[in-house]
Length: 46
Image: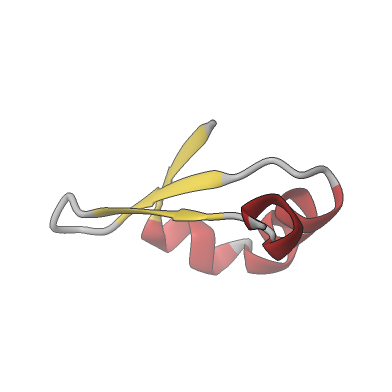
């Protein structure tokens, strides 16, 4: 699973959404306080 900063995620949102939804590759995003969250497609989540 790729791990990126929140700023990188925001800057390249369109590219990451395509990766997440079409290639089914979830992404771990870390904010400036070190808190993490995962973004994944609904299809993969269900």
